[in-house]
Image 1: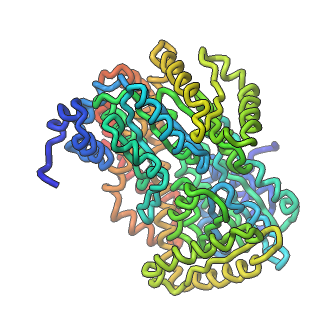
Image 2: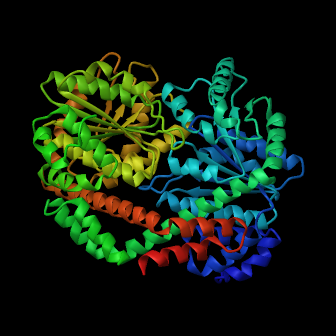
Image 3: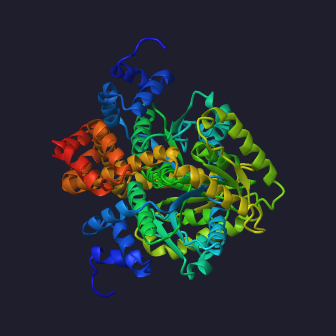
Length: 319
Length: 319
């Protein structure tokens, strides 16, 4: 493992794109190591060059395969690409989904690609915080495009993707009712829609359905200068990938314009809220640990109710 | 709408199982109406007779169809059944998944069935709080079995199901890699595993895979008096449903034993934590609103960093 290198000393190495230094600071951001906060603050202030793209889709939508395919395309065009995969790992076993990552293995050895999985054990607010800090680090390390990939089901996961310059929602043909309905929930956050697996004959229906949904939502969308495209892609045949990359470039231009100011403010507000609430809850956990255990015992014996006990705990911290 | 009936006055009507009164108090619990807290505290202290069953599964696992089938079975055997469906609705459009509920429509008119969807907009901690409060209300209203159904992807949703006497994880044959891996994340919380759609020929593989996974985890499971069963069911043919109901009864006996004390303490601790943290965050939102907007503006202009700004906000509330 070697000696602990102070986080400030990692900064010049991160600026040079040194993988080991990048990985160390990300780990400290994930663990919320107090010693790293000044370095992360420094990184935050210097970040802002990269195009941060959030990609979300339900399990089975093919988003991971798509991320691999687009990464390969971007790298081939001379871009350096960072991928942050937010994995719905178990809070109990600590296991992450590794299957999707395997598709990325060949890319992982390319010096112009950096891949990092963020496990989602712990409160989701913590994942938002560490994911965005990781994007900052990759930004100052010189990555041109940073892809944040999440499973688009939990609300926090959707929010993480929303906190990027361009939000891409991936759908697949032939998924059940359940899944299509969840997709409807992320309809409005999409800057662009992708329908994956468009080599399949049933993809046309999904494309049509999505376009129809967007037409119904046209009133909301008309407020923006950007017209949300629906793009059919196939990671298998490569179909639609160029159109997708071009759409990303197009949206990038919007995101650095005055319309992008609003988005940047929303992202800053989101980030401030998540960081502060995470700190607050950590402080609460530290301050109330033993009192809480005692009250939980009394609660399980019905010697009180959750509302007044909870209020007692909150008062003990805020007054 | 009529006049506002004080929550305390709803209590005797809830005890008689009056649907309108039940619905009103649930709505107040969801909205965290301060006037309702004393009534909810009263309900909490008197609850504890019902068997609370948590059912989770990824989208497409067939859990909603299963809930409809088991509800019909339980009602036919003379039980009164409450169903709380936690829907992954959009934080943006406020829409909930209605498709699955349609399958329940015929049951919904049965006086021995009460069905309630809880939308998951807002912080998830709020859903845990209102779901458990709803279970209390249905409990004192005389429902014998209360089913809490969630999509088992987000961590909070998994936790809600864990906060029940018996946790059932539903898997389906033929789902992709992605989905199977998520399922692995909830392996350890299951008191029983169901494989749905067992009329399909590929169901055997899923049954075998699950049994194998459980064998690998045998060390952990050995600590318990309960042996986690894997049950194949088909809502289409009715296969396995009787075995499932019998297993629920069997687990119910464990949950009221001394082994159940540990579970009750865990549930009480979970509930206290969620309620307190929810209160704390609400207080934080109220106290910091305007300061936060100002800091977000400065943050978006990079005139500071999220860590020190967040710390300022936290300090303003806790000191």
